[in-house]
Image (tube, rainbow, N blue to C red):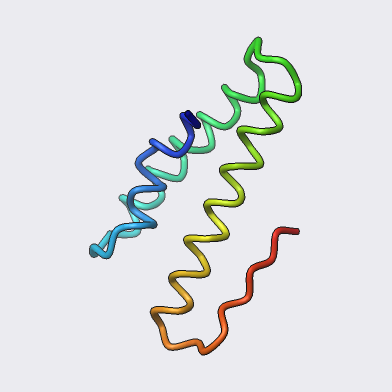
Length: 80
């Protein structure tokens, strides 16, 4: 399972709760440290690539849901 998806930042972004700027900045800092740790781990290149790519896809999906909830008619999914 993708360990990055269990990070607090992902939960804050995907749950419909009020979040302070400080809380979001803290969660983002922890997430970036975790990404750095994963990127430098002993896992092989393709496993790291797969994990980071899956995380990116999930973040794009969360962004799309957020836009859709704000009234945008056709959410656009872009993976680049």
